[in-house]
Length: 132
Image (cartoon, rainbow, N blue to C red; front, side):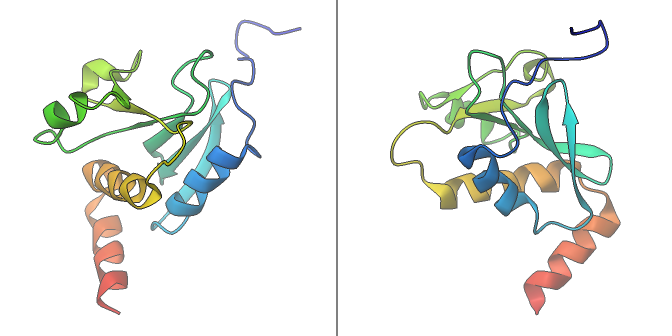
């Protein structure tokens, strides 16, 4: 029985698409995975930078915060959409269930999302890694 405070699982944490996104996110400073709203969320400390499963009917989607200047161009692409709840704050969703998903492109979107929400110390740690 689900109480008012619990959410049904939308997508399993062991799902292959979730695992692929997790593998990208896990390399970021202060990475944390927290289940929230019945779905895996990936965080920089306490701040969200990726949420899996935009809704129960779209379990294989990734919600992320794009660069505001790139957002209009992304919305011209059918893979992207304005997700419920997060959309008004500028976030987008991307369908990852399509054949031929470009995982390098997904990694670039995740990097941008992280950089949009990360604290200065997290960005410094990230940039120091890239210099090594």
